[in-house]
Structures are given as C-alpha cells and as structure tokens.
Image (tube, rainbow, N blue to C red; front, side, top):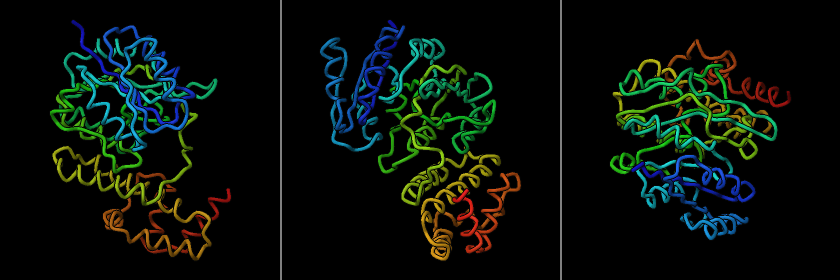
Length: 340
C-alpha cells in the first residue's frame, strides 16, 4: 500500500485564496492523502470555506485555534497527523497537481524530499530554482550547500537571486516519525524566520535529504511584505539567539564558508535593525540609537572580527562606519539613502 501523506494547511485570514488551495490538494494525482486545515483564529470566512469542503468530501480534518501564530498552527498539524509523511501548505498558496506524486516517487526512504517553486503575482510568474541541479545530501560535505542557503538565501541559486529559498517549510515532504523521534517542531517564540530554524535542525538530524530542481509549489507574492521592509530587534534578537543555540549544540556542522556567511547574516541583521529603528528619527537621535544597537550583545561577535572583504561594497561601508563608531556619518548616510 502507498504511503499516507498528511497535508497540513495553515490559514490566518487567507479565506480569499483558501478555496484554490484546497482544490489543488484535492486534485493531486497521488490519492493517499490526509488533509488537515488549522485555522489560526481567522476573522474572515476561513472557517466557512473549510467546513463547506469538509461537508462535501468528509475527508478534511478541521481544527480551530485562537490566534497563536503559524508555528503553533503547524505544530498542531504535526500532532494531529497520522501519515507516513507530512507536507506544509500555506492557505494562500496552491500546489501543482503532481507535487506529492513526484516527491513520493523520488523519496527512496529519505527523511526529507524537497522541490522549488513558482513565485507569482497576478500575471507575473517567476520560476524560483533553489539550486543548479537536483541532488541527494547525506554527508557533511553534501549538506553544506543547504546550510549556506539557510544563511544567505541567494547562495547556490542559478542566477544568484530569487524570492525565497530552501529554508521554507513548504514544497517538502518530511517523514513524520523522523520529526517526532527528533522532537523537531516550530519555535513559537519566533515571530519571523521560524521556518529557517526548523529546517536547520531537520537538515542536521536527517540521514538523507533529496532535492529535485522542479518548481511544483506555487508561492503567492501578494501577501508577503516588501523586501524593503526591515526588521527590528524584537524580530532579530530571538532569531539570532536561536541560531546561536543551534551552532553551540552542533559545532560539527560548521565549515569555514559557513562561518563567513554567519558574519554576513549578522551584518544584514544589524543593517536591518538600524534601518527599522531609526526610521523617521532626526539625525542626532538616529546616531544615538545606532550607538545603542551597536552595543547590543547580539552584535558583539560581529564587531569583534574583521569585516569580510568579499561582502558587497555597501555592506562593507555600513560595517566600517558602525565598527569605528562613526555613527553621525552613518546616520547622515541613512537619511540620504531613505530620501532616494
């Protein structure tokens, strides 16, 4: 008998798109599916849509929870799942009709099987290939490319750019007993980037990971924040602490290239925090806030090391001004940048 796949759809006010999502799951060429919809306290018509489809087919397990965040919703789906594999789907996205069949066909006993996506908005569709080719990763050396892309989402991509990267939880099959045996769950303390931390542990603990370079998941761009949106300390601090906790427990995973990308990520986090927390400030006030952020414990390692010469010029300039406490000049530069 074929493996049962539990498809976990999480929705928070995604009623506008949820029906398309459910149709794409029900239309899979792979027949042995369990469908679980977790409604994370939506105030729109999510519940009405889910119940209507359940009444029609009787094959949907519908769960309502008070708004607790996507991590809690996905963890609830894992707890309720009874399949051999689980697949996560966001309620405002949809699937190619053969995604489950293709991933199952390639599984071969692997703990994680991944594909890439088509990012779309209205008539615009971009095929976002995560790597150059398909591959299987079992050794430390073979996994390095996965960890590098978790740290820098453009690394390893054919054109060096894209809307998303391998750190997403969707477009993958995870063997359920693997997740449960290793207690791999989403961290509800993280408001953003919890997917990335989840996959760090999953990639580390798995015996085998398979990636197929086929865009079979359809990722809606309408609902995501602009890439120009910056996160402040309330986002970066718990994320970087979770990252640090992982590295402390898994030093064996680290390579020299990863260490360089850790510094790059810290640079990005510092820049993002400064841009977010000095927005609309006067120049002197901005300079004082930059000094406070510069002293924060999460950036201690960043400024105790040399700036990486291979980083883009703008990042090196930002780093140099902050490292040598040229905060007023940096504040002026930020003001000029925001006025462009």
